[in-house]
Image (tube, rainbow, N blue to C red):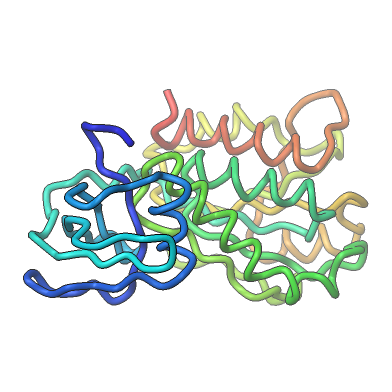
Length: 249
């Protein structure tokens, strides 16, 4: 374990200072078997929404970890981007989607919105896989040392997707008449505080779906002359958007 930054476990709601906390089985396994924590080690306890406290391992074995809550951590940085990115996407095949969830979390996505599209092939698996997806996001949050866990919302029909107040909408397409992403981002001054990025699944968006999103206020943009795989396009676009409007430098 790092001596400078204690490892984190996630508990909601947070216990109060002075209380003892017995971790549930999965988090106990994470501390005892994965990190090999010992009695006396400092541990950060986070609620996944930005609040945190510092604890000490009081008792630990293979099945049980008991923490003593020592103090709050109000001054610890959130490491959240100033740009609230909502990633809306057609559900991809499992392995590809897991990579997207992991890397997009590392790139600072604030929330995930799976979409039901006409060409979505993995629609039935979305509800079944939700718990696994959330675990992947949690592990990515731990890896990049964020304090906020991006939620994965239930699948939403594409025609029900709407922009929030003050939120910009970008629709990614391969159509040649779509605007250049970088140029479109640089044209917006001042930079917005929130953006919703929409991507199709492996089959892309149907013509009627594109028209529906444009009518709802989404601007069609493209990433360049080459046709990219869905997972490649998502991560490339996120990097560019966070570089120009967010905090990836």
